[in-house]
Image 1 (cartoon, rainbow, N blue to C red):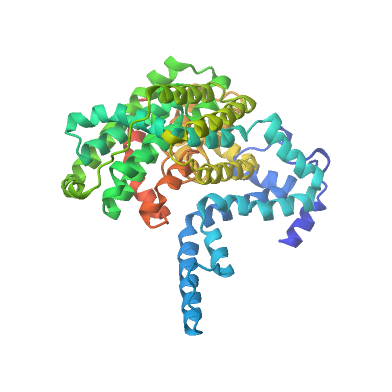
Image 2: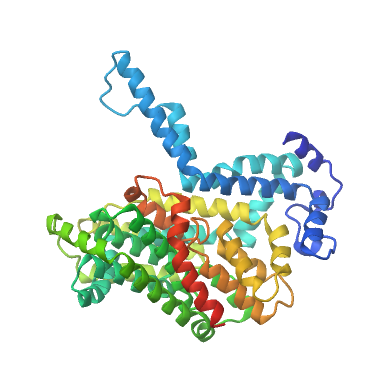
Length: 486
């Protein structure tokens, strides 16, 4: 690694003088994907290092469960050694190797950890000033850290008691049609909840849906197969459910200004297809697991009924007002952060009607997204020629596959940089990015929020392969809607 960095640092490329990353139009012209990639590596060797670190982070994310299990084994081994020596600790004593393994197994922290070797290489090759300029550009010029900040704020707001009560009241009207059973709640949350993402944004929708699923479904201990099918369906539905409008889904937000896509365009080209795809997916899974839903219903008899008082309507209205203000000021972090501070003050003054504010999960999700942006913004050098090498229907499949390994918003953003991108290609790439948003935890920005809320119902560890399997069927159904009704 150090030999490679030394070679990269001594390269006579233009990047050393003008800074890194190099604008896409700053590379020498080349034809074909392979020639373009090799030409850009030759022009700036650090491209290869940055992408190697990124893919190591992706592999680490997919294998995070190994480190979680290792942490548990190390803790158990340490406890046995203490007992053998006659120590009987009355509390959990931190064991450094086990804590390190636990940290390496935290999905939300992994990409941030891999920023360490990335920036060591960055500073070694280009100096501290270039590294600082890159972060400043993402912060102030490109404003790519706005979305992580927004997700932190909207997760905190959407998980409050008044918002959950209001959302539950809305969805309960649909659940009552099915008799208010576990299955009826499951269908209503997954069919109606993702559509809220088109109006209150996807991060808020997934927070609401995951919280309601935790209380109305996961609390009754469904089987592992149904649990993964549910979270896979949730992620796929949230990714597609934000396409009814042009201001809620991250991959759509990246292109609407550049391509002049408005609300009618989104609804008639994407929204109604996504809605039908979600309804079909929910129906297929419900009938496939109908016997288990009947078993889950028998467990509700022993469940403790909630006796908490309802939140006064005026408090609910104030919370909705704060949430609406946050959504409207999405692109202006100074506004929504100021509103968030006022919101925290209001929550404190009405704490008798609030849950205890949980900020750990929102901040971890924000860290994950910020780190993903930092890595992903250095991958344009190879993703852009990959996208331009696609033609016709291949663009859909290519976009869907790339989305599984990078945030779908980054995929669609890079498409806006491609000159003379045909309208049909634009549709296919965005459709593929939206359809594939449920395949992995990094495929769509709101996914880590769902992981953070539901992780405890999977024993603290959500398998990447089982998540992929759970999302495969709804992804295929939604993909068919987008692809065959183009």
